[in-house]
Length: 301
Image (spheres, rainbow, N blue to C red):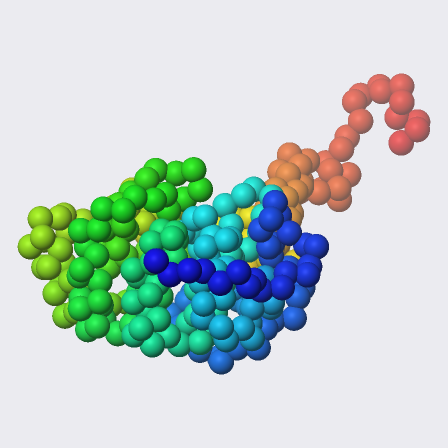
């Protein structure tokens, strides 16, 4: 077995969450190549702005990053799962750094076959899913469709086999609260056909093979691009929230104007009704008025 190096990335910051780096919303983003590597925009922004990623952004030692995965990564989710934590998970920060470096075939094979930690393998499979062309995925991932090693994709969650995890990566474009790059249809069909030939279902379970979904309940079927706790990121509301509120303000003004118009029309109707009851107004009322005969108050008229 590969003997791990004992060197570690220097983590001098005191900003952490039970030993895990947390999201720093106003941090200066780390310099990157400018490539997205297929990572969703909001997730990528949280990665490059994180305190932890700024410390590994210039790291070029592949084996040192593998050590970091071994020591720090304990789940496969893209976002931190703790209620007290915010931002991209440590695993996805390390994954994005590997994408920025660009791995050769030997390094990829090292990740996929590593036996010290299942999460090292998980990062390797995620790297393949994000970076590789759809035509290459069948050749690289097919040997692992039946892998029986077990691990939990979520902290304290249900255990699944590595094979179920890998199959779900290619069967489902959604992954927890994020989304993968689209696999071309021809390549996807070949992957699905091969999975069926091996005796497995062609239906995705979701959430890395655990089952379930973490998508919006608005019926759109789209996954959340960011957790609800991050919807007010960097002190700003999301654009669609601002537009909705702006539209609501216009609607309120419109309704308020209608209320004013309705009250004015009601007042006009009441006034017209009173005039009609009096016989057409004050002048008409004066002309029509005649005192009663022998009225003792006539002298005051």
